[in-house]
Length: 253
Ligand code: MG
Image (tube, protein in one colour):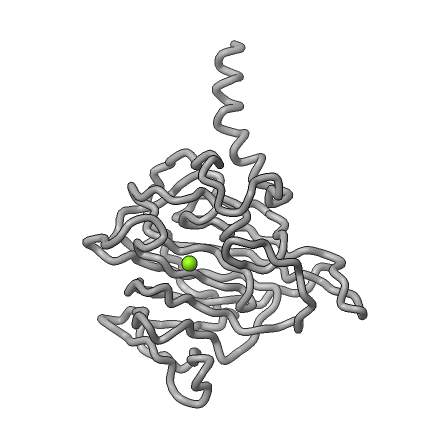
């Protein structure tokens, strides 16, 4: 009985600890931080856009996107076989519409055969409000620091488990996002929160973010507008996307 209970706890604990706070106790990108257990997902989850969703990529049009340095022209990435592909070196792209609290669905695929190691393999990312990144990375048999692998809140919170599929397979993220709140003086009153489901597996559950995403140092929150563009990262790898849609969420009562 005791052994059975211990076994149950071993499975439940990683999920429970993923809730609440991103853990500030670990130095950013620590290689000592335990790697999440691997859980093989059933597969990606394709979810058609609900009637009230804003479709951001339907396989045909880049119109909802722009390149920040050239906001009047088309975004600098390309459409290949009905997918949106990063063109390395052209920079991040962002939505023309701004969003705050939101439900986001997107599907992505890391290049196959894989090239590079660690952070240099199938790296991209989705930045809520252009500031808060859920990492996209080929984390199939590819070790990197725990807070930088696929479905991590980059530099802050590793996913509860590694639910990655191999490169060349479509993977899905469903993200629930609450923006941070600031008072009239610009002081933080509520941190941003994220829930992330990777290939149908809950990997971040209502995690409070420590601040905006940054590399090697943790930046404090800085007040910003209630709505900002969503952005996708060019990290030098031709990662592909499909079926991207977003539903603005009403503010909490
Ligand atoms: Mg990234």
